[in-house]
Length: 353
Image (cartoon, rainbow, N blue to C red; front, side, top):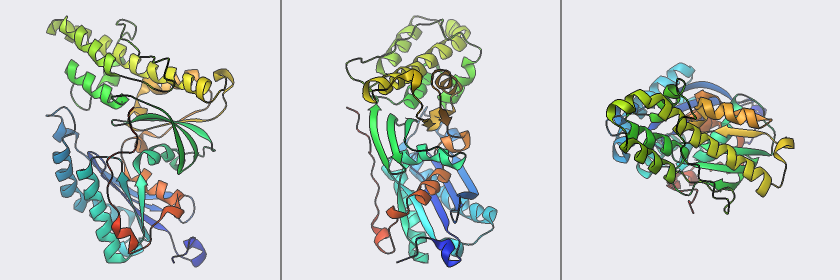
């Protein structure tokens, strides 16, 4: 067995992190000997390739990962100023995500582990999103986690890096999907979330009354399907000239409905599931995932809750820094060589029901 604490043996603990769960290709080298320290982090974004389609095309995403991983690996080692021989373990996203994309990263991880005879840690991509908060600040357990990304939106009660209870999820689209699909309807381009946020800065968020699905009989559950339908119906009644003129107001109002849903559901979870008073709720709230970059979401959550911590924008979108960081926090999940070579991909983790 390998030693749990490499520092006691006079050896650095260096983790190679690999993230390819969707359309971002990312590699990281992290020194976990003491407090986690990123030596190098590099990502390749496919937005310009996927803009033509208005979203992720699984086959194109997987092929792009294959092309990007080799050059990224070379650049990342060069920037970290270490060699492959310095790496002591590998961390790779195994779930959830697009299976084809996940397998490209897993194959790189297995190849590296095979050549160097290294252990590997299979990483839950969603847990890593929330635990990325520890890369920039110390947040005690337990905390209420709000995961908001392109593929998932969920509230989790977090007792530790691998101890998370799902308290609430969407029944259909995630918040990120609602942004992307709404953006496609409005013709703002891709990725729509960032563009809508920028356009909304000049808009009146109260001008259009888009619906919020409360689902009062199902605490913690939320839905964005009615919101998208409402936007589509509104746009069908407008001329192209009107849409162009009203675009900032449409974006601001649509965005407001998305983030207000999250605020309302956070209130509901605190009061109806955790049985606590929102006004006196002192437990930290951690927001992670790509949509955590949304300026209005950060603003409204900080206005309504006391101890809100938002993952740094650098670590919000899919990145290997959060993957290596999560592996560093769960050494008990590390699989030794050659057992680790049996790792496989899983597409799902949270069920929408």
